[in-house]
Amino acid sequence: MNKYYSYFFLTAMLIILASSSLISCPGTTFGGRFNTIFPLGEESKYTKTSFGFDLYGGYSFPHCPFETGLNIRYINWSPKDTYPGQTVSNTSWDFNAYCDYLWDDDDDCDFEPYGGIQLGIHDWFSSYTYNYDGNTQTYKANGGNLAYDLHIGTYYELNKNIKLDLRLDYTGYTTKPTAQTGFGVGLGAKYIF
Image 1 (cartoon, rainbow, N blue to C red):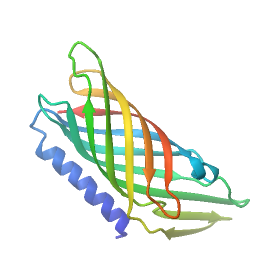
Image 2: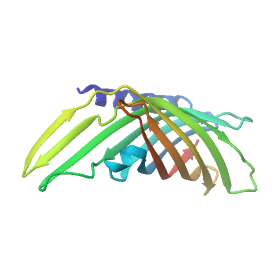
Image 3: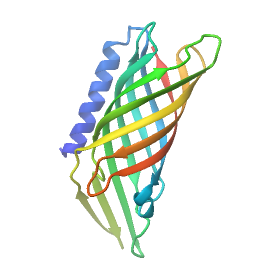
Image 4: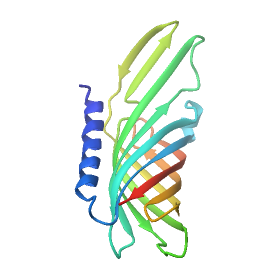
């Protein structure tokens, strides 16, 4: 099995196991988020607006405004320039730990602002898939760069267990020869056990 998929399944298993082991504990969370990422700086010259999703599981500490957990991020990138008749799909996976500060957990307010950071391993362009006139070729890329993400957002409480999630991200990767950065907008939901 390709090492990138091994990382994905291992991280997914850790999230599931961690959520399952804490499922009886109030404050255990499990959720997902769809992301749109706008490349910044030099990268914006070569890369289109990109799309992906987050899958995460964590724990909100009782009587403490912090939530920590594990996060998987998938991103599908596409370059701006391709040859006529050619399509290119570049996919990458991030494997992160996150910590969020919850500003307001007032039962009288449906909105709950939060902010935080996530750090992990980024496989920049984990694979390149080229399709030219029906011929498909896939190449693997070297990964292991640092992924970091600073974010602010707000939850909207639908009920005591389900919260909608709107988030803004500043995402970066320590790739070489130049680092890549992007601005992201995410929309999702989480379930609180």
